[in-house]
Amino acid sequence: MARWAASLDMYRKVPVDLLEGTKRGSILSYGAILVMVTLFILETRAYFTTNWVSNLVLDDNDESRVMVNFNITMMDLRCDWAVVDTVSVLGTDQNVTAHVSKWNLDGVGIRKTYQGRNKNQKDIVLYDEDVTETHEELLENGEQAVILDYDTFQYAKNEFEYLFVDFFASWCSHCRDLAPTWETLAEVMEETAAELVDGQIDEEDWDEITKEEYEHAKAAEKPVMIAKVDCVLHHALCQENLIMAYPTLRLYVDGEHVDDYRGHRTVIEMADWLVQKEGKHEKETETSDSAATIAAQAARRRMEIEGDEAKWLNEIKHKYRRGQNNRNDNWDESEHPGCRIKGSLMIDRVPGNFHIQARSNQHDLVPHMTNVSHIVHELSIGDPLTRRMITGGKVEIPEAVKDKFSPMDSNSYVTHEYHQAYHHYLKVVTTDIEGLKSYKGRQLKAYQIIYSSQRALYGYDKIPEAKFIYDLAPIAVNYKKEQRQWYDYLTSLMAIIGGTFTLVGMTESGINAALAKRRRR
Image (cartoon, rainbow, N blue to C red):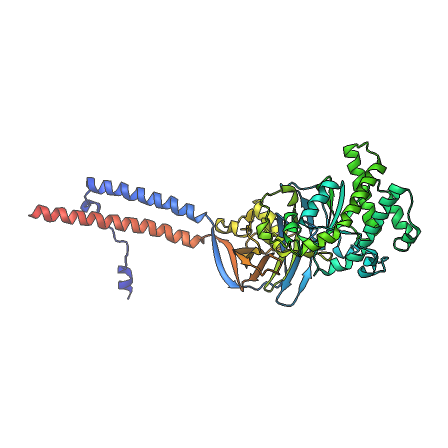
């Protein structure tokens, strides 16, 4: 046993006298050294380089809710009507409009100076509670609010300096509630015009209007014609004037659309608003016409129109115009204001959606006139700090997923046909990234979004909505950096040395054997 142990020698030496150097061996030796040095440098560089490694695991996120951050421009929807709702499969249905910021945009997309939350729509008075008579009772002595059709509407705009029109629909509940108030306003303005002309008012008229209402209306130095248009009968007229909701109370001055009334729908409030608009117009035009002369002319014209009222009503029955035959293709930017909506939502970690649509507690909207084309400036999920750190380069993330946290940013979704809207389907994947921590050391969650968008068709009686439908994946992705262990590095170095030496030696032996065989021949 001892003799066998003494004879064990894995590194026996060949006497130098038996070795023979050759030029070929020298060349191969230099080649072997070059190969080993090159592989050594590459292996060393790889050892000091860290690589991203991803793992798929079940999502163990214990957060019950997650934040959605959005900044969206509705290209053709007024801020007054833009509302944001959230819905989840748990049955949660919540209006969050009061908790987001909205900016009014003009027709070319310029943001106006006002910033903040809209007044809640429920705060607006929908009709004057002081008007106790019904609409039928007010009409017993004649209808003071002049009914207009397609032809007489154009005539009224041309002939009257101030024209205040109620665009309504007979099926609209808000319009029916407003009808007595609107008729009372017409009576007040008519008596005011009469007083401007004759300098007196009949005593029996005090039974129909209050002195307070009269004093507010009297502040208007020029008569205002109070009229109304039934958009069910005159669909083309309302479509040409871009009436998107009922009732729309619109003021025309010198035949031009000036503004829509959006305040409290009481006689006094509307009269004061007309006084304000009249004063602003007078300052702009600096007119020198006599107030009494203009009032007299307006009153006489109004009496003539009332005399023709029966004729108009008869013509209405034969003049129903379809909107398709009277469509106005001229796009007026001023008639298409937009709204930028920005904010954050806390949603349950269950499938659901949030959507932006047109809705009003004071109007019944016209579905085919509702356009929810939009631009997504920002849409991300999770803590806003996460987005700032990722976009600001304050945390290192894999390049392959860098654009997946907010892939919809700066995308436009425009519909060109009626009764259409884009729906977006979002698959949300929880993502853990090594090193993504808050300033206090709290681990932050990121959320990748895989999305698809398609246009949805709506029924003729349904109002389109821009909908974002989300679903959280049950699988999470973990990204972490890994560096090779030192023993892997050493093993690779030995493999390089031994492998290169062996391979070159085998090559040299093969060449030598081939040459020796050739010499023997």
